[in-house]
Each structure stands twice: as structure tokens, then as C-alpha cells.
Image (cartoon, rainbow, N blue to C red):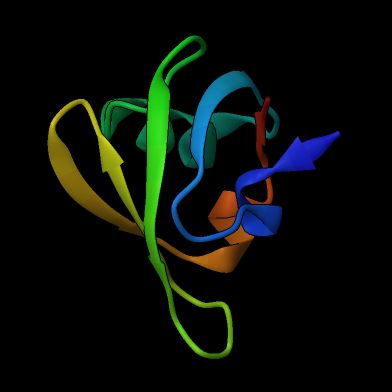
Length: 73
């Protein structure tokens, strides 16, 4: 299982599943990250937190803890 936390700069990925529940999962889905969405990894901070992504044509930064619950292929 590969998550967004493990992604490298420049990778194009597709979201396969969002783990977690409740408010955290809802917040991620409200940001436009849903199953089947294509995600491009733009930047990763030196310590790995946050990760900057391009999702549905806009830029988004995610904390490492949130990126860890998003499964990608």
C-alpha cells in the first residue's frame, strides 16, 4: 500500500482509497481529494511536512498525518 506520504516530487498518482473516518476524512474529501482523483506532487518540505499537491487544477498543501491516510497508485 502506497500513500501520499511516500510519494516523490514529480509523481502523478491516482487516489484509490481514503482511510480514516469522521471529520478528518470529510475535510480531505471537501478539499477535492476523492477516490479516482489524479494528484501531482509538486513539492515536499525538507522534513516531509507539508506536501504540496496539484489537485483538480489547484494547489493544496497537506500535513504528513493527512497524507498518510490517502492511499494512491
